[in-house]
Amino acid sequence: MSTLRDLAEEHTHLRPADIDHLHRIAGDWQLLSDLSFADLLLWVPVDADGTFLCVAQVRPTTAPTAYQDDQVGRIVGGSEVAHLGVAYSQGRIWREGDPVWYGDVPARHEAIPVRLRTAEGEAGEVIAVVGRDTNLSTARTPSQLELNYLTTADDLAQMIADGTFPPPRHPGETTSAPRVGDGLVRLDAGGKVTYASPNAQSAYRRLGYASHLVGEDLAALHRRLAGDPLEGTEAANGILAALRGEGPPRREIDARGATMLTRALPLMPAGVPIGALVLVRDITEVRRRDRALITKDATIREIHHRVKNNLQTVAALLRLQARRVAMPEARVALEESVRRVASIALVHETLSMSSDEAVEFDGIVDRVSSAATEVAATEVSVGMRRRGSFGVLPAEIATSLVMVLNELLLNAVEHGFPPSDEEDEPLTVAASGMVPVAVPEVDPELRPEVVVSAHRFRKMLHVSVADNGRGLPPDFDAERASRLGLQIVRALVTGELRGTIELRAGANGGTEAVLVVPLARNAPDGRSQG
Image (cartoon, rainbow, N blue to C red; front, side, top):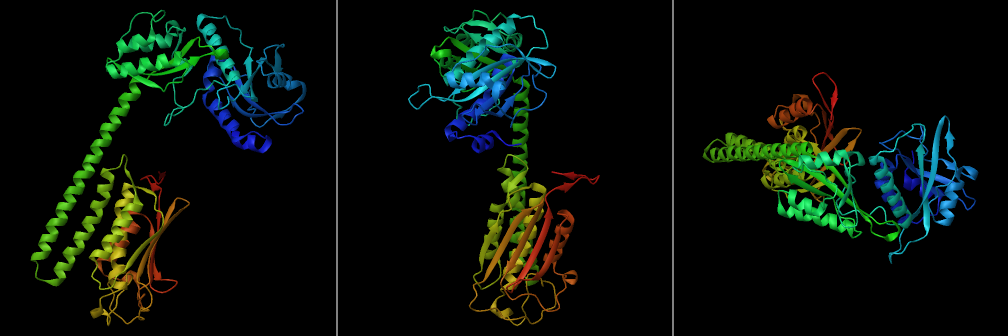
């Protein structure tokens, strides 16, 4: 289905600022729908002949809907939308008329003009109409709660017509907020409570206030209840700002082990401040879970930090041992072990700074690539380049993949561009472990380079490590290669990563290793995870 913006841009001549204002209304109008016990439909004019297009709809959570079918995308005209035409052309709220029937559902029509205020703060022209349609099939006996809901809804409807609702959203603030059913408190112009819903009363009792809220100065009450004086002052200032006609940010109040989220909205129909609406929600359990998760995340990060430190200690011990070994072959083996342990430590170092069990892998690849050129036994200056992005990878994939790339990069540098004393017996990244054979000479004019490429396609990660070095021997067979590095690569790719690897001659010379790794892991029962 098309979005509000798509429909408005395709069928109307509304300006971008107009469409943004309609988006803000659609992001906040669940409040008005619940207070009104009615469906809200956002209509925009299509032609000058009185045709309107529905670009958004919201159903109430406090009453049955008037429409079983979604109305978004519907274009109507004529007598069916005459009330919309009156509200649009005359700029006033339309409440006249008899109930209409939608199938076997009787409904009452209302139409609220939508204005966008000018930069000077004046009421601008009407840009759309909100239809407020109430299902009349269920008879209601008006209670104090319903009367307060409807009175507040009428005030907010007038503010939409004035262009003062919804208030501006604060930077970084999400649309998540207390709903009408969570708890509602209405204040008069002096900040005294004139009505508090039963759920609101219960939320305040959990904070430690056992008396009735009606008649209380809510700003002063917030100061008294809050366990933190600064927090209480901020919550009270939010109430006072709403009474002045401003739209303060949402606030939380902690007291006696409970937490309550509050949102204060100014009530100023026709531009006259008459009080404020305060929505409250008990979020004690939510914050307890948040704190538990924060503690768990901190513990996991500390574990990764300690694992990294332990791996670095192991690498340092191996490095010391390598310096004391007289046999060249043993020293080389120990130095290779140091590099492998260090590459795993790099992943744990990144995880220790992450808020979840996933890492941004591009930075790790860049650091491993840089290290490969520094430690590789070659006299040639080899350039490293990354093309594409690995993106964010889960820890279980990142740990194995970094070892694979570490081996491929080191072999690409050392065997694709060997020192001068090895030119008679060249080996390539793919040929490591094979009997040395003659291969074509490297073009002296070609700048030595290794390119790591990555892209994602259909939940698969495609990676290649390509060099422009000496290339593969004519009789190369990856399955018979016995060098430890290549065995590690094959074991990790086909085992831990459940992927495939192909070693082949590059399109423009050199050697290319191509990996395909699934990003969705399989559970023990064969089902896909993640």
